[in-house]
Image (cartoon, rainbow, N blue to C red; front, side, top):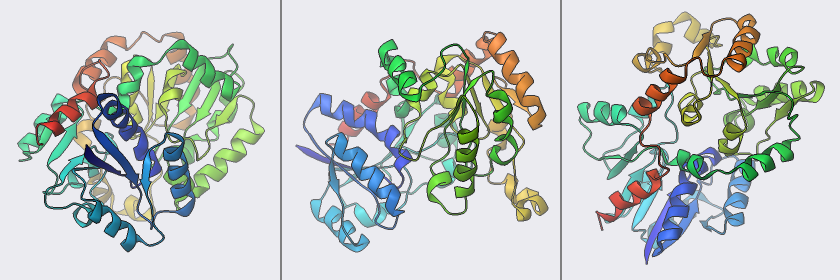
Length: 360
């Protein structure tokens, strides 16, 4: 029996890990654990451990971070899977196979910078990214596809209907999913526009994890609550909803900015609107070059499969057009899927497990 730990820095890493856990369970022969650093926000940790307990996943928890780390080290895991570098070097033993399943595939440079030579296997979501990382000198790569998207290929109509019923969605209206990142975000300029759209569309707000749990960004969840409370057909997913996949499945159009969601929505071949009306901190407005270094500009320039808006006033027109002509950019979206993602088979987790087992 091989012991494997999923070290989860944030609640929103779980959707990347759950398909792997399910594939491991189907395969058998694995003793599976999860853990979250003790210094993370208490509410987030509680939601994380509650979610894992509901899935009957074993947890490693402790009152002190030093105690948690010692428990992990003493367990001598065969495999540790992480979503960022974080505490990696503190928790691995010399024989541990360290695996990176990065938590996002969006438009930030952190994808390339958050790396450590101790990682034995890095799961990569597309051939294009695999080739770029290889050109940068990385040798630990496994072309697997994006594990988070594995459930797309087994979702059924009953599950979709259950999600709609739980929200109370108006089945007579098209559904928009607004899923912005926390920074730099379109939320500040775009959020109130949805009040006007809500008479003609269902609107689902799926905020970033940090909009709930990091004090610098909680103003976003506060405003979203206010909008949802006074607007018909606006549905705010609360901080316990860590998995966006069910809401992709019931949405006709995605609206985002520089989030991974732009790429995650591609398998559905439905319209995507990218809001480029971002709010920047004062220092990033003054020193814009410093800000631009945080973004993957070449990747941004490759987004020919989205409708782009630079001004909030353009939102209604873009949404209406996307709903009226959903096939308009279909060919570009299909090409983008094959470029930004890997195979359409729901087996990214299986491919990753196969790579891990080659190391035993």
